Amino acid sequence: MRLCFLVEEHYRHDGMPNEVIRQLTAWGHRVDVVRPGGSLLRMSEVVDAGAHDAWVLKTVSGGPGLTLLEAAAAAGMTTVNDARAIRGVRDKALAAAIGRGQGLPLPTTYAVAGPELLREIPAAEYPLVVKPADGSSGRGVHLVSSPRRLEELLPVLAGEGMLIAQPYVPNRGTDIKVYGVGGELFATERCSPLHPDASVRERRVPLSAEVAEIAARVGAVYGLDLYGVDVLLGPDGPVVVDVNDFPSFRQVPEAAARVAGAVLDLARAGTAGRPAPAQVLPCTLPVSIPVQATSTQAPPAQAPPAQAPSAQLPTAQVPTAPVSARAGDGA
Image 1: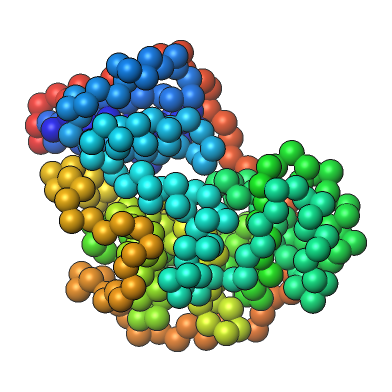
Image 2 (image 1 turned 90 degrees about the horizontal axis):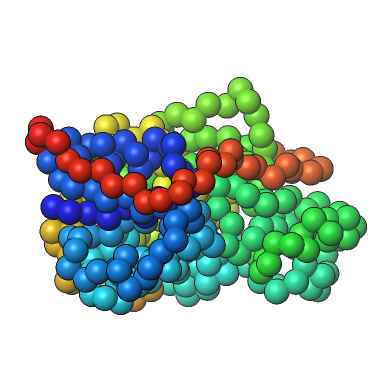
């Protein structure tokens, strides 16, 4: 098969998707890699209907990659994930409206075009978690303890564009990241970006039946095939605080082979029969999900720190032209 991967400079040297690309190449498939943020793109030629069996996106939110993927979808090509589904989760305000409307346990979400409008949120809702509506990789996430603290942060928030704000969910300082790939769910526990603790290392954990059901519903509601879900175990039960398309799949056993296999399966199947986002109400757990019955009751809540730093990842160098990798001998 011939596949096109859209890879932003941010992920140029990242294990995901490069390991997936190497695996597909080793299996005898051709993978063309396009760097949408570092190349002059002649759109009429880049999106050539029929040139690829499927297009795969691994870019940061707000980058040009999603535009290319949507162009490919408009030309009738298969995309992994569905381009509409990716748009639905990358806009966090839209994702909150979709998820709440479908009964997912998301916190109350406020959206504002300018940070000064956050002043209208009632004081009773504090502390708040404020972040860009198109943010990714923990960028620009702030824990705002009070209206007074909001005033101090307004200059920092001024350049972030549309923002969302959600009441802080008391938790133990870690969250559960659930990865969906190839019809299976895998859970890891990791340090919350709002409670940085270098001693907490990400590790695989058993999935409770309750969290597994929520994670499976997330994929169905948003129409995602490969995805990640951030879940907090709050005092009132699990709460979904973020959804990602094509995440890192860290701690997933044989992640590169699993993701590569899922990409091939989706490319072969095309988009036939895939439900549109936000149209699936009932959801049952896939039989392949390893579920272990564990309690989701949260331990004593951890008080929020006075201020949380914004998490940032290093930026890779910008390439000057698209890169094409051709498969060698099949394995």
